[in-house]
Image (cartoon, rainbow, N blue to C red; front, top):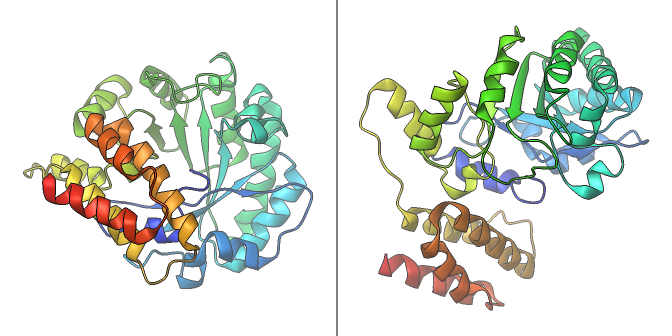
Length: 313
């Protein structure tokens, strides 16, 4: 979710309830030791006990392949206030994978182990857990179990499995059955991820994978209330369905936040990106709103179109 879910967005989403924790955009680790201010910029919540204003824990995510530099920067992150560090072995972006980051490491389980072991060893004396997220593989699923075992042996305390390979990107369907296979060889908690847009999707994922705990990525922005609905479902309570207008109202709130760190043109651009993402969940309704807003150049103009759409819905 690089360039999409920042601290302000995490704040708005976690206010809606139901979230156990959230994870930052990744901090890219190459050959440099990053100063603490870099981690504070990516995760301002580190200055507030690594919690969003709603009190939801925030885990700091690192992405890289050099074990020594990952370990060095994990210690800096801890000194900056990180309470949990997460390693990204799932990013499918070409620029990241070209430099042996994200999902590209899944071709080499021994390097996955080395990276995770170095960070786990660096954090263990500090009492800070290490978690990880992985895809099923790079081109195929042949090494899925090997990579999961490597991460467990390295010392992670939790694994999120995005149920697709790097090559599959975000193309449906997610292979939830593979989450079940991975969970069978793991002694640490496993969370399912991928193509969970609605409560019905969640229920199907549980039926296929046998996993009740899930991580929501793009869905966190297309339906920030799904986490609460899942909790209501498990508690046997009446589930409060999300309406499209609620999501648009959240976009307006995001634009109007007094703590905005972006210039107006960036706020307009990011809102349009959010609207594009909404089409994945809300279909034609979101497409119509995007078409109405795509030529907006100012914040006031954009809010006017969104307010009009909310009144019509």
